Length: 178
Image 1 (cartoon, rainbow, N blue to C red):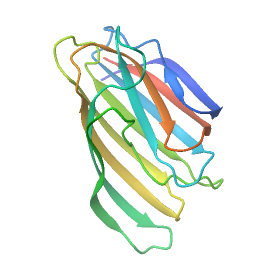
Image 2: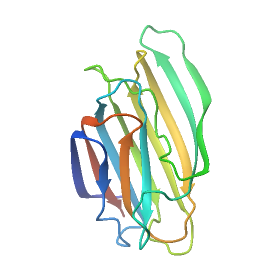
Image 3: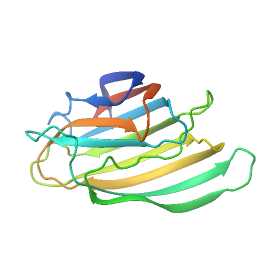
């Protein structure tokens, strides 16, 4: 598997990072690498949503998602592995990729979202996310998310934002996978 860097997006107090070009039929899958995304607000979750090609451009496609999380407290206690009920059952909201990211200077989130066959005009689009964040309550969360975008039209745009407030800093890199 080879990764080809398509674009780099650096946040600077942005309400969202919208990638509106570069998702084409050139690659069968894409990866979005989140590097130290730091929220303005405390205790927020990273979210995403997409647009179907030729659609209304409202970032409001139907998405189904599920999540489980491994947690470890900074103090060494409270380790857990559990299903998280922040899943989304066929909704048009921005589903969560993580939750409770803190805004202290030593807190942020990083991870990889994989989007499979976004240009397919026949099938729904599956995705997975694996990432970590340091939370507002001084825990590290390792998030595992999977789901699908319930449209058969091609996907050509994607948006990322926190559940509250702006993205103060950090980088999102988009790669084509061959």
